[in-house]
Length: 207
Image (tube, rainbow, N blue to C red; front, side):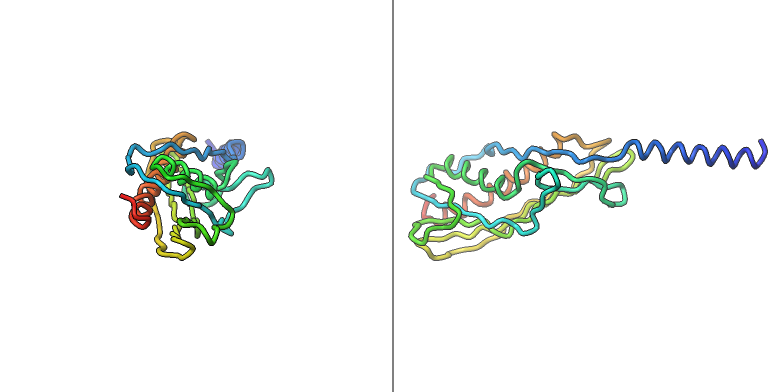
């Protein structure tokens, strides 16, 4: 084979590869932010608790109105598409906390602003959560972080602020499925909730 024919063959092969890659462009993937209660008992408590939340300013939506909750990247970490959901992370965290507090025996209400007269109040602030997926040829590298603050109020006075966090770094063979991504986020929130309820029980005088 002459050098000219060899060069032409290489060029054609390169163009075919580029065309194939262009035809396999990564698209946005929708993730369901669901929650199921953790398999743990926090005892039986009582009393009223008001819960409120300050959403993160970094929360963004795409042109379809979907919340961007993560990023799909190539093997070098360069953004290719977004992970999106129909609800934002703040709503997801709040609904989970309300569910677990009710399960623990509290009478819970959500309010946009904590009433000054509330005997017990909880404010969720400084929410930071993101799921990054770096896609390789034979595996996906997944990094997830969930972090936020809990402020506890008694009779209108802030008595304690603490940070709740959960992290996960995982390598999955081949391409991580939608269900696997949802499971990672669910387990992170379950872990976070298990850090919160005992603190609330202690500070509100419940065991």
